[in-house]
Amino acid sequence: MKTKINFNIAVIGLGYVGLPLAIEFGKFFNIVGIDIDKKLINNLKNNIDKNNFIKKNDFKKSKYIKFSHNYNDISNCNIYIITLPTPVNEKNKPDLTIIKKSLKKISFLLKKNDFIIFESTVFPGATEEEFIPLIEKFSKLKNNLDFSVGYSPERINPGDKKHTLTKITKIISSNNNFCLKVMKSIYGKIISKKLYVAPSIKVAESAKVIENTQRDINVAFINELSVIFNKLNINTYEVLKAANTKWNFLDFQPGLVGGHCIGVDPYYLSYKSLKTGYKPNMILSGRKINDDFPIYISKTILNILKKNYKNLQTCRILILGYTFKENCNDFRNTQVRKILNYFIKKNLNVHFSDPYLKRSIIDVKYKKYFREYINLDLLKYNFIILAVGHNQFKKINLRNLYKNRVEIFDIKNFFNKKYISYSL
Ligand SMILES: NC(=O)c1ccc[n+]([C@@H]2O[C@H](COP(=O)([O-])OP(=O)(O)OC[C@H]3O[C@@H](n4cnc5c(N)ncnc54)[C@H](O)[C@@H]3O)[C@@H](O)[C@H]2O)c1
Image (cartoon, rainbow, N blue to C red):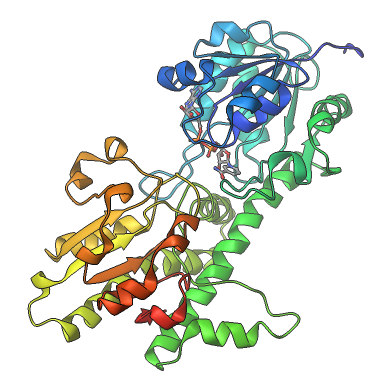
Protein backbone atom coordinates (compact mmCIF):
# COMPACT_ATOMS: atom_id res chain seq x y z
CA MET A 1 0.00 0.00 0.00
CA LYS A 2 1.02 3.62 -0.59
CA THR A 3 2.62 5.37 2.37
CA LYS A 4 1.82 8.99 1.47
CA ILE A 5 -1.70 9.84 0.47
CA ASN A 6 -3.92 12.86 -0.02
CA PHE A 7 -7.11 12.47 1.90
CA ASN A 8 -10.31 12.89 -0.10
CA ILE A 9 -13.06 11.97 2.29
CA ALA A 10 -16.69 11.05 1.71
CA VAL A 11 -19.13 11.08 4.63
CA ILE A 12 -22.22 9.02 3.80
CA GLY A 13 -25.40 10.03 5.68
CA LEU A 14 -25.58 13.62 6.92
CA GLY A 15 -27.79 13.27 9.99
CA TYR A 16 -27.08 13.91 13.65
CA VAL A 17 -23.75 12.06 13.42
CA GLY A 18 -22.61 12.59 9.83
CA LEU A 19 -23.12 16.33 9.40
CA PRO A 20 -21.05 17.57 12.38
CA LEU A 21 -18.31 15.13 11.39
CA ALA A 22 -18.32 16.25 7.75
CA ILE A 23 -18.25 19.92 8.80
CA GLU A 24 -15.22 19.36 11.05
CA PHE A 25 -13.33 17.39 8.40
CA GLY A 26 -14.19 20.10 5.86
CA LYS A 27 -11.98 22.52 7.79
CA PHE A 28 -8.90 20.46 6.87
CA PHE A 29 -9.62 18.00 4.06
CA ASN A 30 -11.40 17.83 0.73
CA ILE A 31 -14.68 16.27 1.60
CA VAL A 32 -17.97 15.35 -0.03
CA GLY A 33 -20.99 14.88 2.21
CA ILE A 34 -23.53 12.51 0.67
CA ASP A 35 -27.17 12.02 1.59
CA ILE A 36 -30.10 10.56 -0.35
CA ASP A 37 -32.38 13.29 1.01
CA LYS A 38 -32.37 15.90 -1.79
CA LYS A 39 -34.13 18.55 0.28
CA LEU A 40 -31.55 18.16 3.03
CA ILE A 41 -28.72 18.51 0.49
CA ASN A 42 -30.28 21.66 -0.98
CA ASN A 43 -30.56 23.14 2.50
CA LEU A 44 -26.97 22.24 3.32
CA LYS A 45 -25.79 23.86 0.08
CA ASN A 46 -27.46 27.02 1.39
CA ASN A 47 -25.75 26.60 4.78
CA ILE A 48 -28.96 25.54 6.53
CA ASP A 49 -28.95 22.72 9.07
CA LYS A 50 -32.54 21.71 9.78
CA ASN A 51 -31.48 20.52 13.23
CA ASN A 52 -29.93 23.90 13.95
CA PHE A 53 -26.79 22.42 15.49
CA ILE A 54 -24.49 23.70 12.74
CA LYS A 55 -24.53 27.48 12.51
CA LYS A 56 -23.88 29.53 9.34
CA ASN A 57 -20.43 30.40 10.61
CA ASP A 58 -19.49 26.72 11.01
CA PHE A 59 -20.49 26.10 7.40
CA LYS A 60 -18.23 28.98 6.36
CA LYS A 61 -15.29 27.63 8.38
CA SER A 62 -15.69 24.26 6.64
CA LYS A 63 -13.96 25.55 3.51
CA TYR A 64 -13.35 22.30 1.66
CA ILE A 65 -16.75 20.67 1.94
CA LYS A 66 -19.16 19.89 -0.88
CA PHE A 67 -22.62 18.36 -0.56
CA SER A 68 -24.30 15.98 -2.97
CA HIS A 69 -27.05 13.37 -3.21
CA ASN A 70 -25.27 11.60 -6.04
CA TYR A 71 -22.86 8.75 -5.21
CA ASN A 72 -20.97 9.43 -8.48
CA ASP A 73 -19.65 12.58 -6.83
CA ILE A 74 -17.59 10.49 -4.42
CA SER A 75 -15.86 8.38 -7.04
CA ASN A 76 -12.62 10.35 -6.53
CA CYS A 77 -12.64 9.87 -2.76
CA ASN A 78 -10.28 7.44 -1.07
CA ILE A 79 -11.83 7.39 2.43
CA TYR A 80 -15.52 6.52 2.84
CA ILE A 81 -16.99 7.13 6.27
CA ILE A 82 -20.38 5.54 6.96
CA THR A 83 -22.69 7.42 9.33
CA LEU A 84 -25.96 5.78 8.29
CA PRO A 85 -28.89 4.75 10.51
CA THR A 86 -28.95 1.32 12.14
CA PRO A 87 -32.55 0.84 13.32
CA VAL A 88 -34.39 -2.26 14.51
CA ASN A 89 -37.34 -3.78 12.66
CA GLU A 90 -40.84 -4.26 14.07
CA LYS A 91 -39.58 -7.38 15.90
CA ASN A 92 -36.75 -5.37 17.48
CA LYS A 93 -34.15 -7.18 15.37
CA PRO A 94 -31.18 -5.22 13.92
CA ASP A 95 -31.93 -3.88 10.46
CA LEU A 96 -28.71 -3.26 8.53
CA THR A 97 -30.43 -2.80 5.16
CA ILE A 98 -29.60 0.91 4.82
CA ILE A 99 -25.87 0.35 5.31
CA LYS A 100 -25.85 -2.72 3.07
CA LYS A 101 -27.58 -0.90 0.21
CA SER A 102 -25.14 1.98 0.49
CA LEU A 103 -22.14 -0.38 0.66
CA LYS A 104 -23.22 -1.95 -2.60
CA LYS A 105 -23.03 1.45 -4.30
CA ILE A 106 -19.71 2.30 -2.65
CA SER A 107 -18.24 -1.09 -3.60
CA PHE A 108 -18.69 -0.29 -7.28
CA LEU A 109 -16.74 2.93 -6.75
CA LEU A 110 -14.08 1.38 -4.54
CA LYS A 111 -10.49 1.49 -5.83
CA LYS A 112 -7.31 -0.19 -4.70
CA ASN A 113 -5.89 1.36 -1.48
CA ASP A 114 -9.21 2.96 -0.45
CA PHE A 115 -10.52 2.97 3.13
CA ILE A 116 -14.01 2.40 4.50
CA ILE A 117 -14.63 3.52 8.07
CA PHE A 118 -17.85 2.73 9.92
CA GLU A 119 -19.18 5.08 12.59
CA SER A 120 -22.71 3.65 12.86
CA THR A 121 -23.61 1.67 15.96
CA VAL A 122 -23.75 -2.07 15.23
CA PHE A 123 -23.60 -5.38 17.10
CA PRO A 124 -20.22 -6.99 17.84
CA GLY A 125 -18.97 -8.66 14.67
CA ALA A 126 -21.19 -6.80 12.19
CA THR A 127 -18.31 -5.08 10.38
CA GLU A 128 -16.29 -8.26 9.80
CA GLU A 129 -19.15 -10.72 9.41
CA GLU A 130 -21.73 -8.66 7.51
CA PHE A 131 -20.05 -5.68 5.85
CA ILE A 132 -16.58 -6.79 4.71
CA PRO A 133 -17.81 -9.93 2.85
CA LEU A 134 -20.39 -7.77 1.07
CA ILE A 135 -17.79 -5.16 0.03
CA GLU A 136 -15.44 -7.91 -1.20
CA LYS A 137 -18.26 -9.52 -3.18
CA PHE A 138 -19.34 -6.36 -5.03
CA SER A 139 -15.95 -4.67 -5.41
CA LYS A 140 -14.07 -7.85 -6.28
CA LEU A 141 -11.29 -6.49 -4.08
CA LYS A 142 -9.75 -8.09 -0.97
CA ASN A 143 -9.84 -6.59 2.50
CA ASN A 144 -6.38 -5.78 3.97
CA LEU A 145 -4.81 -6.39 0.57
CA ASP A 146 -6.66 -4.01 -1.77
CA PHE A 147 -8.68 -1.94 0.65
CA SER A 148 -8.88 -1.36 4.42
CA VAL A 149 -11.68 -1.15 6.93
CA GLY A 150 -11.87 0.73 10.22
CA TYR A 151 -14.50 1.22 12.89
CA SER A 152 -14.82 4.33 15.03
CA PRO A 153 -18.08 4.63 16.95
CA GLU A 154 -19.64 8.04 17.40
CA ARG A 155 -20.49 9.04 20.97
CA ILE A 156 -22.03 12.49 20.55
CA ASN A 157 -25.15 13.34 22.45
CA PRO A 158 -27.29 15.74 20.38
CA GLY A 159 -28.33 18.79 22.38
CA ASP A 160 -25.31 18.43 24.71
CA LYS A 161 -23.21 21.54 24.17
CA LYS A 162 -20.39 20.40 26.46
CA HIS A 163 -19.51 16.96 25.07
CA THR A 164 -19.25 17.89 21.41
CA LEU A 165 -17.60 15.82 18.68
CA THR A 166 -14.17 17.43 18.91
CA LYS A 167 -14.03 17.35 22.72
CA ILE A 168 -14.72 13.69 23.45
CA THR A 169 -12.32 10.75 23.37
CA LYS A 170 -12.75 8.89 20.10
CA ILE A 171 -12.24 5.15 19.84
CA ILE A 172 -10.59 4.00 16.65
CA SER A 173 -9.99 0.44 15.48
CA SER A 174 -8.92 -1.59 12.47
CA ASN A 175 -7.34 -4.91 11.76
CA ASN A 176 -4.58 -3.33 9.74
CA ASN A 177 -1.97 -0.92 11.07
CA PHE A 178 -1.82 1.26 8.01
CA CYS A 179 -5.53 1.97 8.30
CA LEU A 180 -5.04 2.82 11.99
CA LYS A 181 -2.32 5.26 10.96
CA VAL A 182 -4.65 6.92 8.48
CA MET A 183 -7.44 7.06 11.08
CA LYS A 184 -5.03 8.69 13.54
CA SER A 185 -4.10 11.29 10.91
CA ILE A 186 -7.64 12.29 10.03
CA TYR A 187 -9.36 12.02 13.41
CA GLY A 188 -6.29 13.42 15.18
CA LYS A 189 -6.74 16.59 13.15
CA ILE A 190 -10.26 17.29 14.43
CA ILE A 191 -10.38 15.68 17.91
CA SER A 192 -8.73 17.65 20.70
CA LYS A 193 -8.88 14.69 23.14
CA LYS A 194 -6.61 11.67 22.81
CA LEU A 195 -7.67 8.93 20.41
CA TYR A 196 -8.18 5.53 22.02
CA VAL A 197 -6.99 2.64 19.89
CA ALA A 198 -9.11 -0.44 20.60
CA PRO A 199 -7.33 -3.78 20.07
CA SER A 200 -9.87 -4.93 17.46
CA ILE A 201 -12.94 -3.83 15.54
CA LYS A 202 -15.09 -6.20 17.61
CA VAL A 203 -13.91 -4.58 20.85
CA ALA A 204 -14.75 -1.10 19.50
CA GLU A 205 -18.19 -2.26 18.30
CA SER A 206 -18.86 -3.88 21.68
CA ALA A 207 -17.70 -0.83 23.65
CA LYS A 208 -20.13 1.44 21.82
CA VAL A 209 -23.10 -0.88 22.18
CA ILE A 210 -22.51 -1.45 25.92
CA GLU A 211 -22.20 2.28 26.63
CA ASN A 212 -25.81 2.74 25.59
CA THR A 213 -26.98 -0.57 27.06
CA GLN A 214 -25.53 0.38 30.43
CA ARG A 215 -27.49 3.63 30.34
CA ASP A 216 -30.69 1.81 29.40
CA ILE A 217 -30.32 -0.65 32.28
CA ASN A 218 -29.51 2.05 34.81
CA VAL A 219 -32.58 4.09 33.83
CA ALA A 220 -34.70 0.91 33.88
CA PHE A 221 -33.59 0.22 37.47
CA ILE A 222 -34.56 3.75 38.53
CA ASN A 223 -37.87 3.48 36.64
CA GLU A 224 -38.61 0.27 38.50
CA LEU A 225 -37.76 2.00 41.79
CA SER A 226 -40.20 4.78 40.97
CA VAL A 227 -42.99 2.18 40.47
CA ILE A 228 -42.16 0.67 43.88
CA PHE A 229 -41.93 4.03 45.67
CA ASN A 230 -45.15 5.26 44.09
CA LYS A 231 -46.91 2.23 45.56
CA LEU A 232 -45.32 3.02 48.92
CA ASN A 233 -46.34 6.66 48.61
CA ILE A 234 -42.74 7.86 48.77
CA ASN A 235 -41.37 10.51 46.40
CA THR A 236 -38.71 8.85 44.20
CA TYR A 237 -36.79 12.05 43.56
CA GLU A 238 -36.49 12.70 47.27
CA VAL A 239 -35.17 9.15 47.76
CA LEU A 240 -32.66 9.62 44.95
CA LYS A 241 -31.52 12.95 46.32
CA ALA A 242 -30.85 11.35 49.69
CA ALA A 243 -29.12 8.28 48.20
CA ASN A 244 -26.98 10.48 45.97
CA THR A 245 -25.21 11.83 49.03
CA LYS A 246 -23.28 8.54 49.07
CA TRP A 247 -20.04 8.84 47.10
CA ASN A 248 -20.59 5.76 44.96
CA PHE A 249 -24.33 5.93 44.32
CA LEU A 250 -24.94 6.33 40.58
CA ASP A 251 -26.87 9.45 39.69
CA PHE A 252 -29.64 8.31 37.32
CA GLN A 253 -33.15 9.69 37.11
CA PRO A 254 -36.42 8.02 36.10
CA GLY A 255 -37.59 8.83 32.59
CA LEU A 256 -38.71 7.98 29.11
CA VAL A 257 -36.12 6.17 27.01
CA GLY A 258 -36.73 6.86 23.34
CA GLY A 259 -34.74 8.00 20.33
CA HIS A 260 -32.43 6.23 17.98
CA CYS A 261 -29.75 4.94 20.37
CA ILE A 262 -30.41 4.03 24.02
CA GLY A 263 -33.72 2.32 23.32
CA VAL A 264 -32.38 0.54 20.23
CA ASP A 265 -28.76 -0.47 20.81
CA PRO A 266 -29.51 -3.00 23.61
CA TYR A 267 -31.50 -4.95 21.01
CA TYR A 268 -28.37 -5.08 18.84
CA LEU A 269 -26.39 -6.60 21.71
CA SER A 270 -29.15 -9.00 22.74
CA TYR A 271 -29.57 -10.13 19.11
CA LYS A 272 -25.93 -11.18 19.02
CA SER A 273 -26.13 -12.74 22.47
CA LEU A 274 -29.21 -14.80 21.50
CA LYS A 275 -27.28 -16.01 18.43
CA THR A 276 -24.75 -17.57 20.80
CA GLY A 277 -27.59 -19.32 22.67
CA TYR A 278 -27.48 -17.04 25.72
CA LYS A 279 -30.61 -15.08 26.65
CA PRO A 280 -29.48 -11.75 28.13
CA ASN A 281 -32.12 -11.51 30.85
CA MET A 282 -31.01 -8.27 32.46
CA ILE A 283 -30.70 -6.40 29.15
CA LEU A 284 -34.09 -7.57 27.90
CA SER A 285 -35.92 -6.92 31.16
CA GLY A 286 -34.40 -3.43 31.27
CA ARG A 287 -35.77 -2.87 27.78
CA LYS A 288 -39.19 -4.15 28.82
CA ILE A 289 -39.34 -1.91 31.90
CA ASN A 290 -38.39 1.15 29.85
CA ASP A 291 -40.75 0.27 27.00
CA ASP A 292 -43.65 -0.17 29.44
CA PHE A 293 -42.85 2.93 31.50
CA PRO A 294 -44.88 5.45 29.43
CA ILE A 295 -47.98 3.29 29.89
CA TYR A 296 -47.29 3.05 33.62
CA ILE A 297 -47.09 6.86 33.76
CA SER A 298 -50.27 7.22 31.67
CA LYS A 299 -52.20 4.87 33.97
CA THR A 300 -50.93 6.70 37.04
CA ILE A 301 -52.12 10.01 35.58
CA LEU A 302 -55.47 8.56 34.55
CA ASN A 303 -56.05 7.38 38.11
CA ILE A 304 -55.34 10.89 39.40
CA LEU A 305 -57.73 12.41 36.84
CA LYS A 306 -60.45 9.91 37.74
CA LYS A 307 -60.17 10.98 41.38
CA ASN A 308 -60.23 14.70 40.53
CA TYR A 309 -62.86 14.86 37.77
CA LYS A 310 -66.36 13.43 37.75
CA ASN A 311 -66.46 13.94 34.02
CA LEU A 312 -63.02 13.36 32.50
CA GLN A 313 -64.03 15.23 29.36
CA THR A 314 -64.06 18.50 31.24
CA CYS A 315 -60.35 18.22 32.00
CA ARG A 316 -58.18 19.91 29.37
CA ILE A 317 -54.85 18.12 29.35
CA LEU A 318 -51.61 19.40 27.86
CA ILE A 319 -48.49 17.31 27.29
CA LEU A 320 -45.55 19.67 27.37
CA GLY A 321 -42.53 18.38 25.42
CA TYR A 322 -42.65 15.72 22.74
CA THR A 323 -39.08 15.14 21.50
CA PHE A 324 -37.27 12.07 22.77
CA LYS A 325 -34.96 14.20 24.91
CA GLU A 326 -34.43 17.74 26.16
CA ASN A 327 -33.08 20.62 24.07
CA CYS A 328 -33.14 18.65 20.85
CA ASN A 329 -35.61 18.46 17.95
CA ASP A 330 -35.35 14.69 17.40
CA PHE A 331 -38.68 12.99 18.01
CA ARG A 332 -37.93 9.61 16.45
CA ASN A 333 -39.13 6.84 18.69
CA THR A 334 -40.22 9.32 21.34
CA GLN A 335 -41.93 7.57 24.23
CA VAL A 336 -44.12 10.63 24.81
CA ARG A 337 -46.10 9.38 21.79
CA LYS A 338 -47.24 6.38 23.88
CA ILE A 339 -48.63 8.73 26.54
CA LEU A 340 -50.38 10.81 23.89
CA ASN A 341 -51.82 7.70 22.23
CA TYR A 342 -53.03 6.40 25.57
CA PHE A 343 -55.04 9.57 26.26
CA ILE A 344 -56.30 9.77 22.67
CA LYS A 345 -57.55 6.17 22.93
CA LYS A 346 -59.31 7.02 26.19
CA ASN A 347 -61.01 9.84 24.30
CA LEU A 348 -59.65 12.50 26.62
CA ASN A 349 -59.32 16.15 25.82
CA VAL A 350 -55.56 16.21 25.17
CA HIS A 351 -53.13 18.48 23.31
CA PHE A 352 -49.38 18.40 23.02
CA SER A 353 -46.83 21.08 22.34
CA ASP A 354 -43.07 21.38 21.97
CA PRO A 355 -40.97 24.47 21.19
CA TYR A 356 -38.76 22.33 18.93
CA LEU A 357 -41.63 21.19 16.70
CA LYS A 358 -43.64 22.94 14.00
CA ARG A 359 -47.07 21.88 12.77
CA SER A 360 -45.66 21.16 9.29
CA ILE A 361 -43.57 18.21 10.51
CA ILE A 362 -46.24 16.62 12.71
CA ASP A 363 -47.76 13.40 11.39
CA VAL A 364 -51.26 13.99 9.90
CA LYS A 365 -52.70 11.62 12.49
CA TYR A 366 -51.55 13.87 15.34
CA LYS A 367 -51.99 17.35 13.82
CA LYS A 368 -55.34 18.02 15.48
CA TYR A 369 -53.81 17.39 18.91
CA PHE A 370 -50.78 19.59 18.29
CA ARG A 371 -50.51 23.21 19.45
CA GLU A 372 -47.66 25.51 18.43
CA TYR A 373 -45.68 26.44 21.55
CA ILE A 374 -45.34 30.04 20.46
CA ASN A 375 -49.11 30.64 20.60
CA LEU A 376 -49.79 28.51 23.63
CA ASP A 377 -51.97 29.77 26.46
CA LEU A 378 -51.11 27.46 29.34
CA LEU A 379 -53.96 28.84 31.45
CA LYS A 380 -56.42 27.18 29.06
CA TYR A 381 -55.45 23.83 30.53
CA ASN A 382 -56.43 22.14 33.77
CA PHE A 383 -53.70 19.52 33.82
CA ILE A 384 -50.19 19.81 32.37
CA ILE A 385 -47.85 16.86 31.98
CA LEU A 386 -44.22 17.96 31.79
CA ALA A 387 -42.69 15.21 29.67
CA VAL A 388 -39.41 16.75 28.45
CA GLY A 389 -37.24 19.26 30.31
CA HIS A 390 -36.46 21.77 27.53
CA ASN A 391 -34.67 24.92 28.72
CA GLN A 392 -37.47 27.07 27.25
CA PHE A 393 -39.85 25.72 29.90
CA LYS A 394 -37.80 27.42 32.63
CA LYS A 395 -39.48 30.67 31.59
CA ILE A 396 -43.00 29.40 32.41
CA ASN A 397 -44.75 31.42 35.10
CA LEU A 398 -45.45 28.55 37.50
CA ARG A 399 -46.77 30.77 40.24
CA ASN A 400 -49.47 32.04 37.89
CA LEU A 401 -50.44 28.51 36.86
CA TYR A 402 -50.58 27.48 40.50
CA LYS A 403 -52.69 30.47 41.39
CA ASN A 404 -55.10 29.54 38.60
CA ARG A 405 -55.28 25.93 39.81
CA VAL A 406 -53.57 24.40 36.82
CA GLU A 407 -52.21 21.11 38.09
CA ILE A 408 -48.84 19.84 36.90
CA PHE A 409 -47.54 16.29 36.75
CA ASP A 410 -43.77 16.69 36.47
CA ILE A 411 -42.28 13.50 35.02
CA LYS A 412 -38.79 15.03 34.93
CA ASN A 413 -38.61 16.68 38.35
CA PHE A 414 -37.90 19.81 36.32
CA PHE A 415 -40.06 22.51 37.88
CA ASN A 416 -39.91 24.12 41.30
CA LYS A 417 -41.59 21.56 43.62
CA LYS A 418 -43.54 24.33 45.32
CA TYR A 419 -45.88 24.63 42.35
CA ILE A 420 -46.11 20.97 41.37
CA SER A 421 -49.04 18.75 42.24
CA TYR A 422 -47.62 15.39 41.20
CA SER A 423 -44.31 13.80 40.23
CA LEU A 424 -42.84 10.30 40.07
N1 LIG B 1 -28.08 10.41 16.93
C1 LIG B 1 -27.21 10.14 17.88
O1 LIG B 1 -27.22 10.73 18.93
C2 LIG B 1 -26.13 9.10 17.68
C3 LIG B 1 -25.04 9.12 18.55
C4 LIG B 1 -24.04 8.17 18.38
C5 LIG B 1 -24.18 7.21 17.39
N2 LIG B 1 -25.27 7.20 16.58
C6 LIG B 1 -25.34 6.18 15.52
O2 LIG B 1 -24.93 6.81 14.31
C7 LIG B 1 -25.67 6.28 13.21
C8 LIG B 1 -26.37 7.41 12.47
O3 LIG B 1 -27.33 7.98 13.33
P1 LIG B 1 -27.97 9.42 13.09
O4 LIG B 1 -28.71 9.74 14.32
O5 LIG B 1 -26.93 10.37 12.60
O6 LIG B 1 -28.98 9.09 11.91
P2 LIG B 1 -29.88 10.15 11.11
O7 LIG B 1 -31.13 9.45 10.77
O8 LIG B 1 -29.90 11.46 11.83
O9 LIG B 1 -29.05 10.40 9.77
C9 LIG B 1 -28.87 9.46 8.79
C10 LIG B 1 -28.86 10.15 7.43
O10 LIG B 1 -28.59 9.13 6.46
C11 LIG B 1 -29.34 9.43 5.29
N3 LIG B 1 -29.44 8.24 4.47
C12 LIG B 1 -30.28 7.18 4.62
N4 LIG B 1 -30.02 6.25 3.67
C13 LIG B 1 -28.98 6.72 2.94
C14 LIG B 1 -28.23 6.20 1.86
N5 LIG B 1 -28.49 5.00 1.33
N6 LIG B 1 -27.23 6.95 1.35
C15 LIG B 1 -26.94 8.18 1.87
N7 LIG B 1 -27.61 8.71 2.90
C16 LIG B 1 -28.62 7.99 3.43
C17 LIG B 1 -30.66 9.96 5.82
O11 LIG B 1 -31.34 10.73 4.85
C18 LIG B 1 -30.20 10.77 7.04
O12 LIG B 1 -30.02 12.14 6.71
C19 LIG B 1 -26.59 5.23 13.80
O13 LIG B 1 -25.95 3.98 13.75
C20 LIG B 1 -26.73 5.65 15.24
O14 LIG B 1 -27.05 4.58 16.09
C21 LIG B 1 -26.23 8.14 16.69
